[in-house]
Image (cartoon, rainbow, N blue to C red; front, side, top):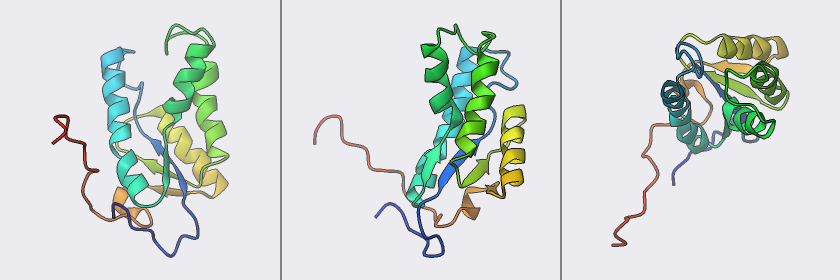
Length: 143
């Protein structure tokens, strides 16, 4: 079994993973991709704990592309990036705030606190979390 469900939670939580994405990157695509990868690294442990991980950029970036924006420096980005997180928080049960300077992540936490949502700063604090193995990867050689 890869996850342990915490009986104190009556259903899986939708947990917004918040942390630096654009902050400190100078809009360098490689640095933003590295930041997104850091956010995504905790998606599996959140899922393994019995919850549904969510990252705002998973929603905002396709919306931005479909609107014809040229990237996060496009003026349209301000109308999409932060509002997407705000709209997602209307559906989320909690926020996992990862370390690092981020105006957007700080806004996510402020909204969560205002709405009475749980805010976690460590994976270990998420209900059902336990250390565990990464998922098994198929052998590319097929053996």
